[in-house]
Amino acid sequence: MAAVLVGQFHARDAEGRVYSVHEYQESTPSADGLTGTEPVTTYKLAIGDRINKIDENEFLLVQSGITLIREPDSVIAS
Image (cartoon, helix red, strand yellow):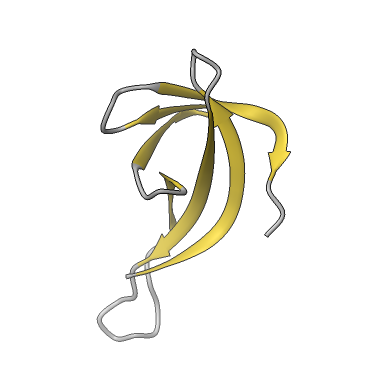
């Protein structure tokens, strides 16, 4: 399985702390190596902590249960 960074953005928690979130697409090749399943999008903090997407702009930090809200127009240039 290979993961490719496809996006980055900022999100805030209820106390106003800003987190840098990385968006990845992961694909799993088939056994024959010719076709694979559809890519799966996953999210992680820049420091590696996993995040679950709740809806378009709301995310949940897995380890702590903190809810993060995506900052509007916060695309980070890469």
